[in-house]
Image 1 (cartoon, one colour):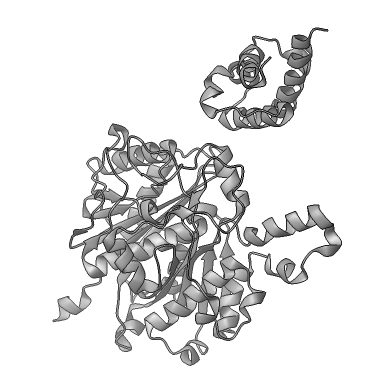
Image 2 (spheres, rainbow over the protein chains, first blue to last red; image 1 turned 45 degrees about the horizontal axis):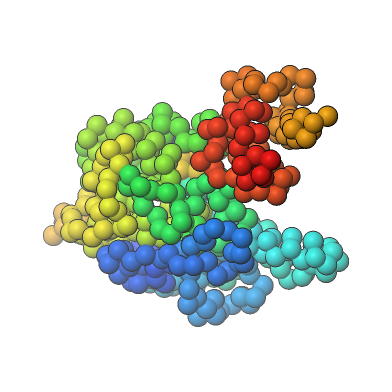
Length: 419
Length: 82
């Protein structure tokens, strides 16, 4: 991670990497177009949880994906053989492929990488399997559901669905920052020339286990998610998938592809400081690593898409780290105000939001915002999207255990330069 | 043994199990965090175990009072009606 972006792309055998396809399964819309509309409108995905029994909890709102029929997207595989999170990841990959305008037959002749991040894998199935085991014993476990569980399915099933035989397919288990890790993995592979394309992102399905864990920690908001607000009460759990197609700039230009944004670089670190508490110093260091990797100076960043979960601890620690690095920070928004916390999908969906913001010249709002907490003193673009010409956007992802991942995206304006 | 002493014994067992310490290390007033290395996650574990043992619901806003056995007893005593 020492190379500088754009220093000597040809001579060093390095490629510029661009985003040309976006696939979205989210609580505010399916597909990049609906997602874009949702972000522009400041749509909320919050609703009462229906995917598991919520009796006994004092409150149980979440950001579920509704109106999703896997058979609308998945054609080669039998959707019933896939867990809910894998259905999301495969559907999002199908959408991204179509959005990129790529010919899957041509992709099959190329080397590729598939990297999908997750927090829970198929814990939704595990919830049911555990319940069945307790009620009826292990001999009654559903063999189909049992086969769906391994988290490796999240990425391998994409290769199977698309018939890609010359790919490395990895599932990245770095929890709530995993989407950014997956994008970083794809970026390295395409930039180095190791792969010609990458399908990267994250996926998770809501499950009772994770909801209950956050609930017990006292971090589930009663009704809505209010990042940076003085009265913020925590997260809402969410679900979905975001998959991004990464390819070399030259291949995108050669086929006349639409370029949403360029991937400039990323940074990762792990401080192993605490099971759940974020660490300001290491998060600040991670942002510096990303800026360094991208060859970008802090004053060039026009927007930060924060991890912004809406918990007391995350938002104040994250803003303090941002201030440590940036001094007076650029506008800093949290898409989790709309999407809830979709766990492994979160930073992938936010990266897609960043790419759409760059391409469509706007900033998605932080909704449900009433009064900014003095400890989170940023312009969070409260409640309404604003128009903005964004050159460079930073996407933060943090995870339990002290895993941090930060991705930098930039506007690709090569066409303007040559015009 | 009085009812109170019995309950304190039960609470002590729970706390020692979660904090992985010996029961003779704990007094009614020794502090979980300062004297026995507890942190916020352990505190929540203790709260959850107490809810289960005594069949009560304890609001997490009570955590700041639950710093030692005496404090825990006072907090649990309210919903339990001791």
